[in-house]
Length: 149
Image 1 (tube, rainbow, N blue to C red):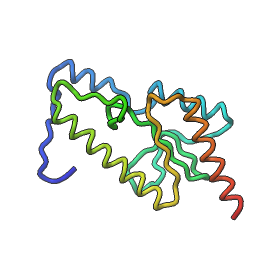
Image 2 (tube, helix red, strand yellow):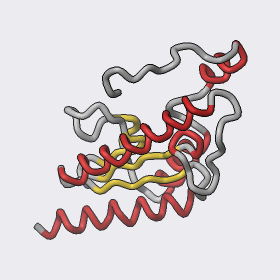
Image 3 (tube, rainbow, N blue to C red):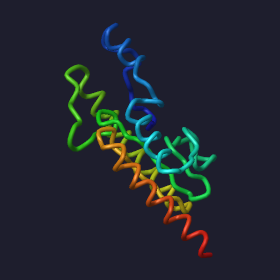
């Protein structure tokens, strides 16, 4: 966060606070569906780890040998162009939060790509089986590339 930028530290109401506390960071229904679909294709992966230990960013699925990192992005939190809705309460705060998330996502993608990783971002609303096929294709291509060396 930039120095000098003030952010609200408390929820706007008790209901909002409880809602925010119930939001899961990992193990969400769409993430579990993607994991099951990828596993069904015969791929094995690590869950919720840092692809680059020196960078405080955690990928949802990580294929360490193939150097493929998969991120499941929530439509609200990451500003999905199709499904993101503006918050009715504290709209300025949430708009800034989503903007910062998108900037961080772009930086994460850049850092991983510079380190030789393939980055895949999946929106939570995307069909798990189609996303899993895309992931499998990337992992197998990376494995073929590695084996050719």
